[in-house]
Image (cartoon, rainbow, N blue to C red; front, side, top):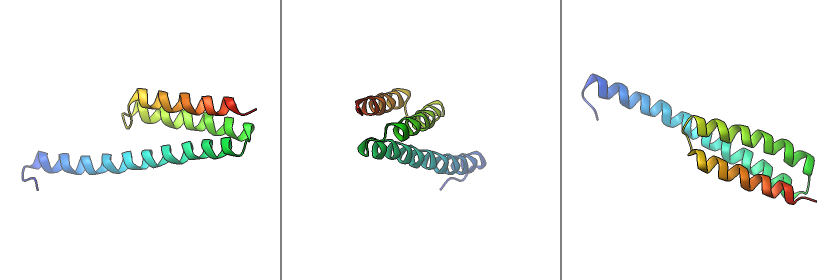
Length: 87
C-alpha cells in the first residue's frame, strides 16, 4: 500500500475511475446485446432504435477512453451491418 499522500490520492482516484469504467463497459455489453436480440427477432424498427442508442453509448465510451475509438467504430459498423441484413 502507498505511503505518500499523493500516492494515496492516486490510489483513491484509480478506484473511482475503475468503478466508472466498469459501469460503462457493462452498459456497452447491455446495449450491444439489445441490438443483437432485436436482430435475432427480425424486428427492424426496434433494432434501429437500439442501434442508435448503442452507437451513442459506444461513442461516449470511446470519447472517455474507456474503450479505444477504433474498437467503438468497429462495433458500431458490425451492428449496422447486422441491422441492414434484416429484410
